[in-house]
Length: 128
Image (cartoon, rainbow, N blue to C red; front, side, top):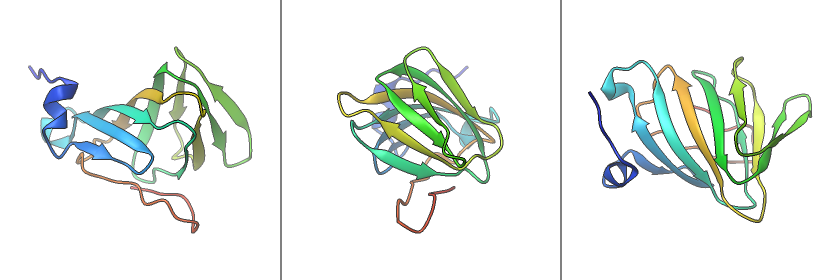
């Protein structure tokens, strides 16, 4: 059995500043579960252009609001209690509203090593 708190993770390399916020990588590849669970806090008013080429991701919104824009320009509002899943390695923009942080529980398959960090540039989507 694995028992771990946010505070436990903050003392490790698995507490990551990903560029627009922080991610507590609660379960990682080293836990041998086959997936990763993260507690992700995106700072207010931020935008991330992302594409997970090697992972599928699902995100459940705990608090805050924002939006996700797909590669075709379709925009979907993110609100507490909703989930979105990037089931086709979807390139997307994730945006947090300016009033408060966007807090998500993210699940990645296959598992992350836990120390990955986004590199946001004007050259395309950040990926790992």
